[in-house]
Length: 573
Image 1 (cartoon, rainbow, N blue to C red):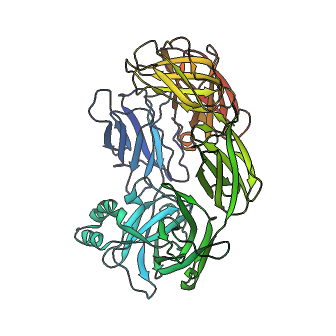
Image 2: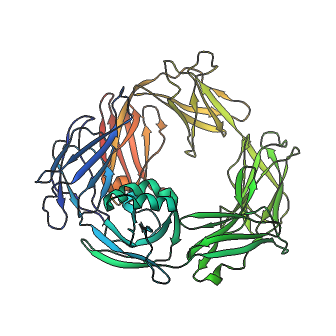
Image 3: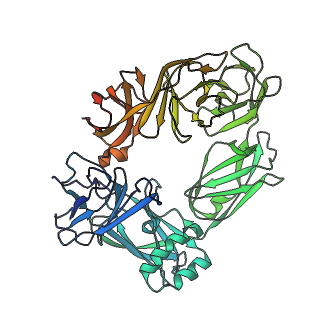
């Protein structure tokens, strides 16, 4: 079997097997020369069999001198980590293929190592500082925190081992609490400190976020000195459009961490000990228990102490007024909520509760255009956009209704029922009530008028369907006959194509029902992972779609048989 080529981060991991308890063979080789990687540690985690007391089981083994290994037990979509000295740690999922007994070859890239010291602006080394490596986008590079962070020793030296190569890494320096420093100082070795550091990550405070990015080559060991400048104070005030101070406003300063400060009676706020770097500042006001952003996001570049002084945030007094009426009889709809969110900045929003006479006033808005939405009791899609300061608007919201029905056989309250709108594809999850005194077994509420397909997924690999259930505006809909479950089938779908997110749309011909869509992530595509879909028996039309795009990329036809898994690989080129 051809080896799996490594990607930019390490290796494509796809361990093939054919059942929940069949051994999984494999082989680990070095990507640069194809030699066996002996002693590599293979750690797999998988769901426990039914009836087991533990929810997750672990299988740990090591490669022999030929790089071969066997995992005794594993199931599809479970997690695996491969670690070897001198190579980048690789995380992935287990995936099943058509030839389960043939060993899968996994290629590991040689890791890079970053060593050095952390010093302050005067050149003094900082003992027990913590250095972390992140992707340039700001996301953690690794799956385990102990591999992202390394603590300096008592002389200010650090070592970040097993770093992946080929992409820019952002380095950050953190200060550890005094108690955390004392705990690390008592440990006898660097390995013990690295293991213990994971339990201390909640005690870190960011010191700098303005270090240069680094790109490492396979097998490279680079020495670097990280200079940390002294933190500064950030001060300012919040005012309205007339320049008057605004109190009781929560100001947020954020980067990889977030800090909060509340304005005083004169509108002033203050942040202490802020590291130099690029930050974002926003102001929030409370709407009940929910903070609502009332200013745009303002970039704050802190490169010297003077940059943090005299920052001013302006809260505007723009407003949108109107009334909410139902589309059924045009009567006022008090008690529901109205949300306005800025067209250019959706997180800049305001929320109010409709008055008893149906009127509402959204105030504190920055000048601009806003989408408006009604929700709670009655609901609507976003309407508008509407400008601030315009004439009062009238919102007509559709009344929400419910679908109720019964199941002909026994079921559990942990089973699942979904109603899918035939025209829009909107999916609403309902609930099942197995109690004998319940009026109906199933209920899906919060539905707009229209035609729905109802799908119930029941334990014991059963599925029940009620196609084309019509929901009106004047009353709830009751399905006229109990749903009769039938044996379900498992369709295993895999995408062989460019690394991207995809949607899988499945139409059951016998029922004339389009099932809830399934998403396959870019990571699943890269790993060659199969996604299990519960489907009814019979002919199925399967289409591959791209999120927020037009027509299908590919269409396939498959016939599902009860008691037997159907495997479908869709190749996109």
